[in-house]
Length: 567
Image (cartoon, rainbow, N blue to C red; front, side, top):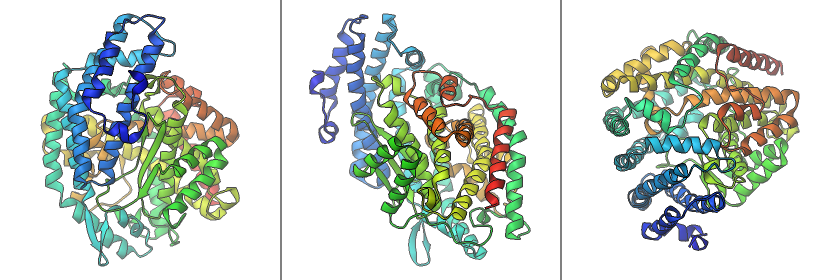
């Protein structure tokens, strides 16, 4: 039976539940013993890989064109007719393995995750989880349809980004105001959708016998190594160790621009009036530059990226009705990752390719593990893979190192990257603290006005240095524009934790680049077979988010910024 599983994408996408179900039945009917558990896990993984690839490809199609009715129908049909029964069938297999008392080699952490998933599973939640994905699609439609008329041409909000680097302040302000005006036009629509999200998530938690959605989501995200209280501690550490450094960066920018206060449209323009960095022309130029850099970082990583280019596993063209943002997904049957993005010709696009390629390399490395359950990883370390790659690649941005810039331009790009990383921690704290408030106060959070007020409160706590006076509605609705809050609740603090790990990997690379990259790759290859502290240690870092560790990281970053500014 398992020898006849679909092996091509066209055949896979035609697979129906009536053809899939017998495979689950076969696995559920087998007697599990120490002698056959490996074969059983291998068959389960083969089935799981195909379902995972079906989901990834169908979801990808809906983000590549948010108004493609056929893609939307195919995705929703999958959610309704395959995802729902498959989740129930997966639960039976988890329970079967747990009841057997068997402990397959390399399965300590996967079994721990299965216990958590089995405890959380409720049949009644399956249609609600499907409905949640449909609400996500509605959010993406709203955002994907946001365009403006800029200089006589219909322009997406993302395509306005290069204008924010225009040396003319009035032009930047005009573009920023236009963008905000368009986004505020959807204020009511997003608030209405938000109420649906919250009601649905509250019911999901209730069905799972959890006191609130945060507790449900914590277990759903398989967070074993830290608690909500640790997140609060992280927020305080950022307030103490990072916010002062962020203010120094903002004040330096204000002084160099020669403006009395720094406004929201002053954050991307070069402080010395230089034109924006242009790392590539056509999109294939972006791929060529990235490939050259990756080959310098590590030949095997370069080989992985060449495979993605050759097999058209990258879609970075920005266009109308394309979902916002960037991500890396996985096609587990094909043993290939796929990178989605929205490039508009800026250095940030190169930075995003470096970031998402880190995720892609993580996929390539963990495909070597035999079972899908061993490849499941928390985002806390998945983001070390991506953020670490940005930093490991940074020495190779200059042309004399295989990159695309002069030495001065490369220094400029690296300074901006390090400054952005410092500035990210306070913003991350806003997003995470806001989400804790939402699910601690679900009744109040149903009202968009209350969410606006809380977002503004957290903004004032962490984000001093930029003058938003006169633009209070734009500031308060910032939570509308952070897709994680709507689509992937509580998924954001991982970026802050991972960035701290990535800086430690980079610190090691400053002493021994080859050794640090080798540690990095070994850690990626572990997949989810060990816990977060062990994964960080394997990469040459420690899993920590206290004030002292943050201060050490920020000190190194400010030191290197100073060295680069001398260039």
